[in-house]
Length: 115
Image (spheres, rainbow, N blue to C red):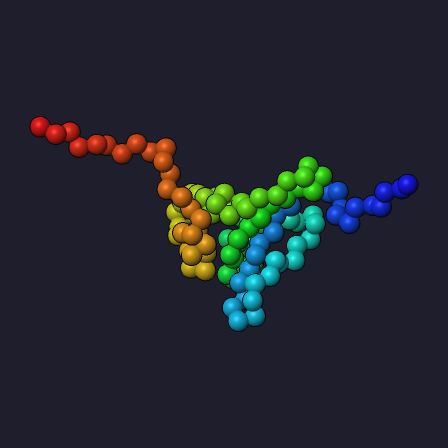
């Protein structure tokens, strides 16, 4: 008995998609050219205003069999790139970044020394 081919293309690369909120029209995953659905393109696209109200970013690799929400990683990268450029994130990204960015717990704050 022959097995039928998978309906999921086995593209051996990580793919990233942005969930966009279109207000009263609802939410949808934005179309992405397969060759331009890498993390760098998505982060650059967010900073270049190619999205207007991002809600979530997911990453997946069907050949490796994984998928996950990468919104926190993307928010951290957006904040870092804006800091490197000495600017605030664009207004439309502020809610996204604040929603997913977790405080950096690697920084040790000085504790008051009692007398």
